[in-house]
Length: 470
Image (tube, rainbow, N blue to C red; front, side):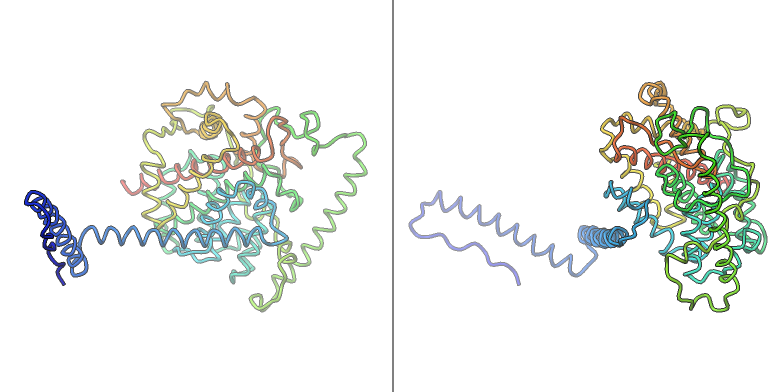
């Protein structure tokens, strides 16, 4: 129905006023007619503005759904009386915790080429490189709940050959990510019947990098202390000099005396021995169970059934080496100007593993946007220092700021947590910085985790890019 024309002017209006009103009403009539035609067009054909509005509305709906899921995940994690130590610490920064839980839930539980049990087994392999009992036990429980074969938990040798092929890239990314090369990608993608698809490999790499970096946060927050287990093999590497965890550095959780600790050591050994015997018995019952999926096992008991992380580790003497001491002819510095997350890594990982790029990018942005460290230069110094010790350099950054903004003890702590997050070397982690509040310490640990995550992804994605180009 067409809109009506302008009404006739009243008789008492002068001719000049009548002319102005007629002109004004004519313009209004023309605008209404045009608007009416636009509405008709948008309802009967694909009008560009309408389709764009629909896309915006759809994106808003998706964002709202994601926010609801994130809130549900966060409430579920914090609403339980037995919330784990990692979640409790991250909860001091709720805006970051939301992005972390959303990404982790997507990686481990949502759509993807890898079966759910395999994802958790890959997470076990990643956490075992740093002897992180906390994550090994956690993912072992999830692996079994999702129907995973309990025989695989006997060790890496019991896993399918296809999963064992990930061991080398797992080892490299965990300790010396600059060694990741196109040849490693080719081996995984061109290995006959056991070969991986490119989409599967990208998801596996994301899981490995996620768990390696999470090991650093677990170690830095001392969350692994409740799951300490005796280690059968020598620790991987030695932390940097002066990074000791004793009372001499002001750490109240460190060993207070070596002269009067014999009785405490004996008691500790007895407790460890009893715990190991109970674990072995429970593990034996579990592995001989004929109907594991239907077994009614409560959550607390389930977490202590599983094997020593060293069972999933090969080449235990492979550990972090100082990148600065490497031969530059063989290991060139990774320059962000040549391959960056924003310009290269994000688009590649998002194309091969849908939506994960946005979730990871949200984590990176969230951690750098936290306000507990009030100086933006300090946050950038921490981030760039971690990338530097992993061989990544920014040409537009003055690295003299690192020494100006980061005290020596803080640098040693950052290096220990980023490169040596292995609780088998020391009972506690150095968290004795008097000037830092608790939320600030947690923020530093989050920066370490996310900077390491991005570094591993950059090396792995660059190797994948080189394979695709070749």
